[in-house]
Image 1 (tube, rainbow over the protein chains, first blue to last red):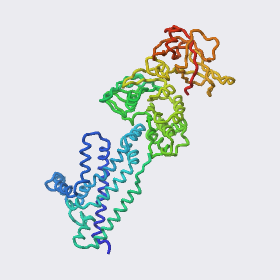
Image 2 (tube, each protein chain N blue to C red; image 1 turned 90 degrees about the vertical axis):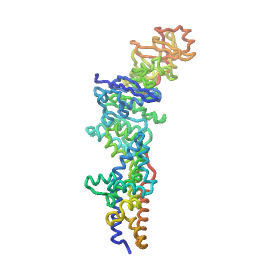
Image 3 (cartoon, rainbow over the protein chains, first blue to last red; image 1 turned 90 degrees about the horizontal axis):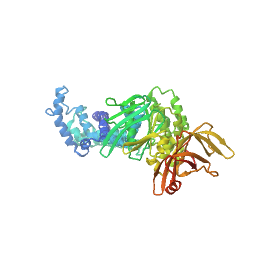
Image 4 (cartoon, rainbow over the protein chains, first blue to last red; image 1 turned 180 degrees about the horizontal axis):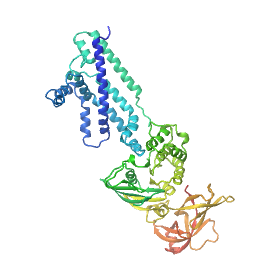
Length: 225
Length: 361
């Protein structure tokens, strides 16, 4: 026994999905985390709560509303149709967008915590040493908050690999487009092919363990300031 | 607009705190912003640095406008150096990396001369390859000062750079600050609540009280003004600058020339003609009507009483001036009883007997 072609396809798809999602989340989540960490606006609470919603909601709820929104009559659906992209549900990109929402708190919160822990001072020092805003971000915030960014990337990636409910709601089960590893395992179990299910499931266990091991060894909770 | 002045006008209203200042400061030398914590002196410094942005502010430094109704230069565009209370070195960089951080961004300062000078001035040559956590508190602060100087600022701002250090570390850094004072061509704004630091380092003092400027003037003038808290302190003292005139190795004494007179002090390890600053405490000065013929006291200066003020029930603070031009201020703390017994009054000529002279640097 071993991985079937369908398995390899599912694994490749899963990694592509998780990789893209993580990349997008670092791009989108960092400004959100930056804003949340530093704002004194009264919107901080509401925005923080919305970002954290996926932590408590069943994935089916998120999937359901994204499906409605991206559907033919939803606002996102109408927009995507108007600009000629077509409808997103049951496509790979629909899955990417859903994953971005679903994994958002796992990326935003570690970055936000790291920026909050940094405080205002290093940025002020950099400003008095002629560093402009972008320069300050890349020369001070990124290196000093690196553990936070690393945690964010690993958690975002791992969490996307592990999603199932949202995928079923938004993506269905289309080989090569939306059939990720977790769905593939579900299919094997449905079809009573426990042997195949074991191969994939155990690979997931080992993969997840290695990711978390990397997280805890690369990123021990001690910083020297 | 004058070109060799710092002009600063700021008005800021916080719910619990108002700052309202209109200052003209000298374009060189060390100006101390002196006051209690909470008086607004650090806020003033942060306004000058552009770290706080308010609408109602004007600032020009030696002819360059940094802020007015239309202009607001952000901090990173102001040619300044800033030393924070805590060294605040970047922990991910070595001492050298910290120094180079600002230099790289200034551009034309990469000739290395500025760096070498700053390193030499602060004595940190042997520390450059260390990380901040491998440095002592005093060493960290010295690197931070050098880092601020390495960008060749046109204004140096220092926010209580010694306040976070213990006495020993303070003593370690003060000599370096005094060297800065002598070596720097640029104006320095130095925030402090320590009369001792101000007396040692400042040329000009701005006394800040509750967000307002209470008084401003040369350090020796302000320290001897009887209406200010500085003179009413237990440590009240006059600050006098003098030049080393000669050494007497037999008696281990050094003779200083001060404006219109001389002072003998315990042998100083200074070269002839070197400028020194000494401090004479009011409690170490007593007054006599006639020149004491035989006295163990070394320094007896003819002086004139300018002003007297009762400070406690039994005590009177007397402000005197000595020297030919009567430019050197002195303070004496005597009892009310002595004042009445000697019938002292303003304008009177007396002899000031100085029991001790403390060297400041």
